[in-house]
Image (tube, rainbow, N blue to C red; front, top):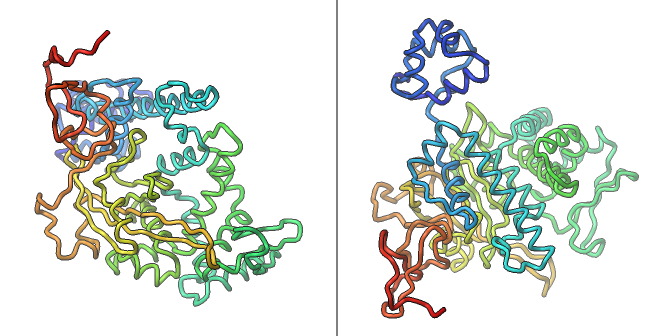
Length: 486
């Protein structure tokens, strides 16, 4: 701890307590000049001072430990690269802002998000007539706002997770051979709810239907055992923790009732996953099996995607698993799920990187692909990707296929079964990818789909390059032959 520079956090602590430098220095038994040096990172925080801080202000070492702001930096870079902003800010300047004033960085990101939402809504009203950002109308949709809600909380909701784990222990679900029976008994005994099964003809595509007046829960006969248990757990969330769901949804400050209702459903689904896969037991199993998703799916009787989603939530303080990012995409590149507990950031502009293995997964359905991916900031991640498919029963019924990606920082990859046999230290193993073409800094990428918004294009009829969208070299002006007629 003696080498930690924690000036910003020390300054924030003093501001929160409403103290002057002189008053705080007196309480810590140090000189005001020494405290000033600590706050401006000219001196490291020593163990004796840390102990006095703990005694005087009730904070522990984790408050001052080095914090990973990589995800916040990535989001800030994405926001400042927006066409409407396009500020040329260096990586060092962004890192300094995030380290010293993280609340300002978050405010900038939030302002950019609100701006994009406003543009999208305005564009929809007038038919998208040339407004910048009109191609991102999805940002104004309630589902996307709910994804942001979970993303901002790193996909971990502590009170719901603990409530689900407590019920799992009470019902002894960890050792139960049939989760469905245990959950159905709970619904019957505690809530007088009867569970019945209906065929596909009862309702078109309806998997779960609850009649509160008759207190009857109907489940589709198409659901497998694990899927039935998930739907039963979802209904328990609404019946036993409605007030908690309301409270957590209120913290999202959603503008519309529709978005808030969607958030409640998402929270109920989170509870269901935590009930079927109780935190401590699931984490222990994941570590024991080296995060083998298919073996975990067999053990907990759920699908591949459900396991991936649960693995991305293992961020309980003091009992963390591998911090994963999780993404689900379709063949057209649309991201329908995105969660991240790492520094990896999903771009909001310009789509995703076509060199990312999550898109290659569509070429080998059902097979698990691995990739070491290096971002422009030098950080490397280990990704696994696989397709999953869903289909209604019966010949000729429509199906849907997604590709799932689950990734972690490369330093955690040795804990995963999927890294066996790979030389993770070999730099040649890494594939250079970016957050999205419009914000990517890799100007020589031959796969680029859009020009970088922060660069000036080199428009020259006398030159052709293999790399699309060549840019002007720094300090160079356009060649005379590139002039366009007026």
